[in-house]
Amino acid sequence: MIIRTAIISDLHLDSNHEETYLLFVHLLKQIQGNTERLYIAGDLFEKWIGDDDNSPFCLDVVQQLKNLSDSGVSLFIMHGNRDFLLGKGFIESTQSQLLSDPAVIDLYGEKVLLSHGDLLCTDDRNYQILRRTVRKSWLQKIFLALPLSLRSAIGHRMRKQSQYAQLNKSLSVMDANPKAIQKMMSRYEADLLIHGHTHRPNLQIFLSSGQYHRRIVLSDWGSQGNVLFCYPDRRKELRFFSKKDSLG
Ligand SMILES: [Mn+2]
Image (cartoon, rainbow, N blue to C red):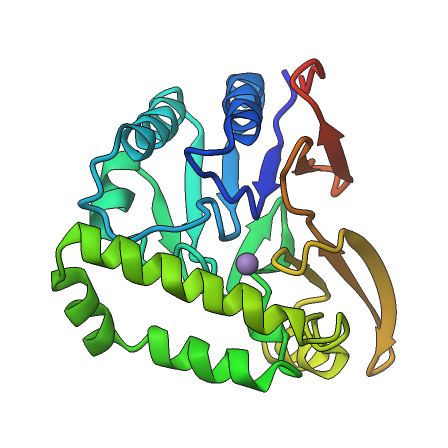
């Protein structure tokens, strides 16, 4: 039997996008029995306004992930910029483990740095200020104490504002900054960084302090899904797939 680890990011699951949801269900089915760990490197959801959101869609995704955990796949979740409010309730009900961002993970003896990727977009100063603000725990406590309907409305408005702000930003401002990449990798002494967020799938090899470093960027999901399979012989395989594709 093949043993491997799967890494995904930026699914942006939303009750309005059935196609992506079906790809997600397809992946979970395909990896059962042949994959020992699944890492979700942020933005599993398009939005998350609190673990008490009992909409049928949220409950269903939680159940799907719980079934995966029950089948013996270890599940690791990292916050993205859209779902950083995933909390204890979600982690407990899915039987997953919450990772810090970035997180050092051991992939078959290889030290790998996993990050959502928004921390690397340091050229977007306004975003970094917003990020620091919304991640303050006192602010999150106040937000989570509001009624769900109000949280939903606030989330919707913030999303609209962010979309509007993005219209005026150049593509390079919203990409990962090369210096920020090198800084993060040298701080954690890792020569492989895997992240998502920028929606620009990439494999980059670069020289830094006399050593080769690698960066793998996962893509976002839409009418196609994508998953990085990591094998014990250190082979990595980035697979783009549709519902018809076998991922065994
Ligand atoms: Mn993101």
